[in-house]
Image 1 (cartoon, one colour):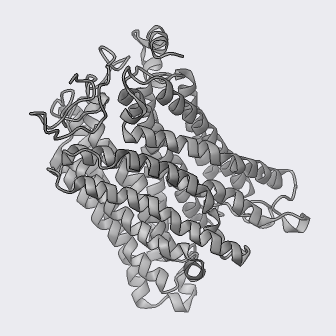
Image 2 (spheres, rainbow, N blue to C red):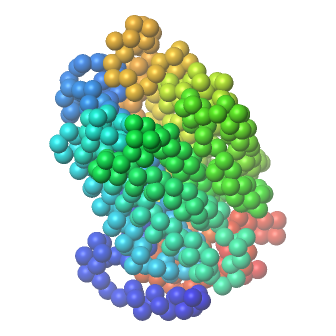
Image 3 (cartoon, rainbow, N blue to C red):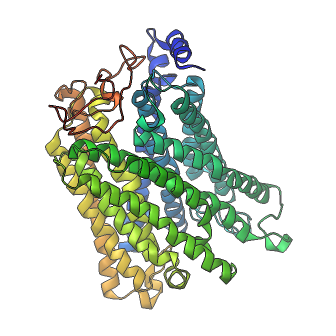
Length: 566
């Protein structure tokens, strides 16, 4: 469908007064669907954070009654750990980074008025919301929520003989399957809209990098999720129909699930990483007042990362009995995939070099993303080498490494994006002082949570153990002190999130009016009113150049919006 036809179609469909239900609950407006995804994702983050609080209190103070929870039993502990991981990956990172920011940014940044398929867009969120409710319902069924870890390895997930929560296991699989359906529908919209509804004059290399990265992430998700959906169906059959796909007693193979899960699970890392890196790119160019260094290289590197991400999955299985010769192959591919990611980070550092840097709150979050993610990347090299991974596997070293990659993606990049685009979303500025208090109150405790866990992991402490007092080698005083330090730091970090919500509240109530382009940025979303109404633009823009023309020698001003003629 041509751009003009899409615009006319959307004008006829959307641009009229709507009631409360139609506008806020049953909307097809991409911006409202963004807010629905974002609010749901933040609500799930609060639930996932509460789960982390409960099980960390058990680890630091075993056997005590945890405030707001009570005594954490072994079954509680397994369910809390499992659903914390599940929620933060599938119900926080994916809906916020891909669905929320993708919905908001793609139409605005490419200069169109809505998604190509607005009703499919609405259905995507409705299925996602259903999946979240299904997952949470598992805590209220007989036997309780699934407690076999977020990776759902058989036999803990597949047979009643080994699973203490057979109904909870089934609900968990159904919830994940529903969530995947929602993101398949969303991905169709993102890809089609970005390819077919760009503003007049916008060539492919004029598209902002965050839009490219969300599109590439959507393609990765659609290409990788098929085997896991097949595996989920087989797992449901094993749980409820007595089949034996993953049951060795019936000729099945439990390691098969690991292959199906990680063939999706490792591209999934880049599905959420790429939008986070894209958000960071948009912010550092604006607050360094510099053109993004090597735009085409970054784009080609992202594509190479996506291709390579399909060749590394078995580095999660070095201790699962795979052929040692294949372990060597996957060690090499795992080390290779660090090259394009490192290249992107160095490109961002080159963009910052020599820039006129302003340390506003969004820029602090963007710089923190680079620094914290580098720690995750460097510690991942140890786990990519099969010899080292045999020792580190399933220790707290792995857990700390994972959080140094995933916390920057799911939390730091989210706060960076929210604080950067908040003026456009609401028409109000956030309080920068409160933003910086929240920033430091999040970043400092985060490091005090997970650096001690690296030490515990090197010392041999295995994860997913309910009470370390039963293991004399792991119950020594200095290990106990580090577990307490990590738990106290978590409580401090959770407490500082109140500052963020207070900032949101006072911004909406009394915040300074933002204007259309408070950051003096180039991309098209800053051309629209703040906040944009139906149709986004008063007049659909025409594009004359790329998105990162900052500090151009021929310009008196240090920015050059894409829609401004030469």
